Amino acid sequence: MEAWREQLKNQVNTLEKLEEFIHVTPEERAAIQALKGTRWGTTPHYANLMDKEDPACPIRRQVIPSQSELANNFGMEGYLIWKENRSTAERRPDAIARQYRDRIAFAVTQVCGIYCRHCFRRELTIAKDLKLRLDIDEGLAWIREHPEIRDVLITGGDPFLLGDDDIAYVIDQLRAIPHIEMIRFGTRLPVVLPQRFTPALLDRLRGYHRVPIWINTQCNHPKELTEETARVVYDLLTCGINVGNQAVLLKGINDNVAVFRALHQKLLNIRVRPYYLFYCEPAPGTDHFRTPLHKGAELIRDALRGHTTGLAQPLYVVATNIGKIPITLDDRLIMREGKKYVLTNYEGRTTELDAID
Ligand SMILES: *Cc1c(COP(=O)(O)O)cnc(C)c1O
Ligand code: SF4
Image (cartoon, rainbow, N blue to C red; front, side, top):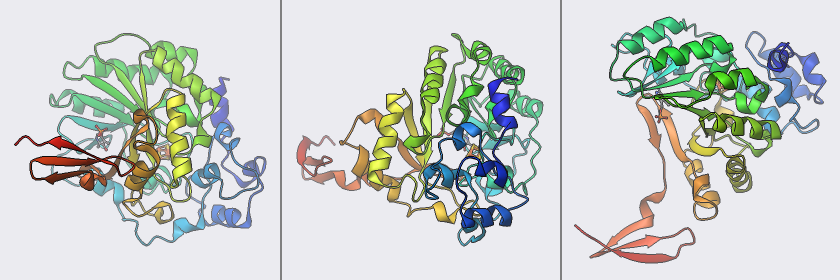
């Protein structure tokens, strides 16, 4: 059996299996009991990164259920329906989520390598109370009929959990559509299941094509980045695939300056370009992961901008039903004074620029 299939077969999704990796606390045990009937679990690869003793470990907190998930004060019922405009006039297959004119998200599966407790698709991936019919051919047919779509973001669940043939099929079918200019994948597998990127799969992905592939992965803490992940990123790049990161701002996990800076520096160190930092979305059961809205902008100001390599800076956004909205604290950095602008740098020093009106 291929190593990645073995990882999935040995998924750590019972108390007994979890106890092989860590000393489970009474709180974790109670939460696993209380959340029976919902999905949870992680690959052994990711479970190996857990701290055996520390329940505040950033790896543990991202995958082990917590009783806080039951205290839902701010989560929005029916979040995904609202967020993905599934109740609007335009009729679309369940696999297609649309917020923009020229691009869509195309969900091809609802299974994942790990089940992130902060997932904004929790209703689909974890709670399983949202039933969607994710039919690939229905989605492809819709895309063919919509010439305004030039960019398809393949998502899930995790699209790289499809078999090699299915992945190649979706790519080939999309590339055959004249109005498609680029294909993107959102996948956590480079981080949580690097074994998935076998030589056989890489061969199906590699090459110079009219329609390029871009991948964005999700890494939220520097501890998640291993030698295996670094290798996969290199392999993808040598196939002609660009690799970016979409981090989620998570309270107690990456919301401090030192961790936040280390995460973004380490991403560049393994050739991954930070793309977005997401505010943790108000899906039901995720209150305990959310910070104040401006926290992400403060972290970019205090940990990254000017303090380290410019390439390390993601754009901080809040994802909404009308698209992603950038959140910045930049207003005060550019002040107009008569015929000049006064520009302020990261240390508070100022300089001037003539204004042209
Ligand atoms: C995030 C998203 C996209 C892609 O947005 P970009 O800002 O181009 O990365 C497209 N469609 C939907 C529904 C999305 O949620
Ligand atoms: S891998 Fe993505 S879709 Fe799956 S649980 Fe994590 S955030 Fe959600």
